Length: 286
Image (cartoon, rainbow, N blue to C red):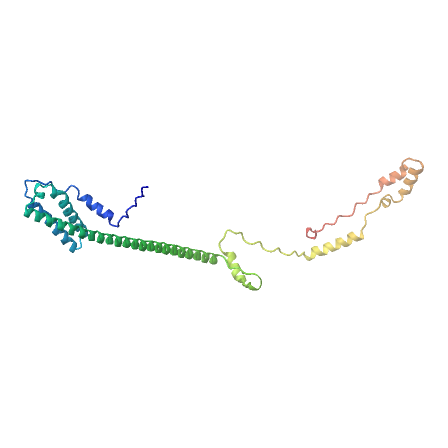
């Protein structure tokens, strides 16, 4: 059974180092056998010195670049020279020195990578703290804006209520024992007249009715007419016919014919009394 391959844990500075490696690709010149190999060893030695110099100055990116250049030049470029495998003591000495320096540079390069990892962790922590601080600042600013809006809304509401209080009088509030009595303002006659005389669209008030009082002569005349009306009674039908009523009644009942010409003539010649005068009352008594 084939075991499952474990994924290697990505180091914090992996992306940073990959970007540096990509920038250094295809920058090494080709090796020429016409050039003495000693000159190439000198170039490798200069790269080693630059590597240590940047490590001491804590320029990790530059140190990493120079370390990678030295390692690639020592492992990939130098072996392509024809004199690299020559057994001459001088060539062997240069080769051994280069390999020793390569091992030291690789070990030092690992330390540089660790320092780069620490830097990335510190940067990540700084970014996290900055983001947390910015988040708190934004939350605080939002809370301050909300408080300011609430204060402005409360102030606006209070101003509106004050305006309403000035326009309308306050009324008693509460129920039962907690109700407070508020005395309404009393206005005297002068204040009311002043309010009535103010320019307004309302019509003037209607004056009270004037009580009626009849003159003395009219009152006495009405009393006399009333007494006269009570004393005088309308005449009856028998009184109107007077003495001829008996003859007319006897003739009409017994003979079934109208009364005699004498009685009729006497009735026609007798003057008819006028009806009693109608009393006129002033309209005020109705």
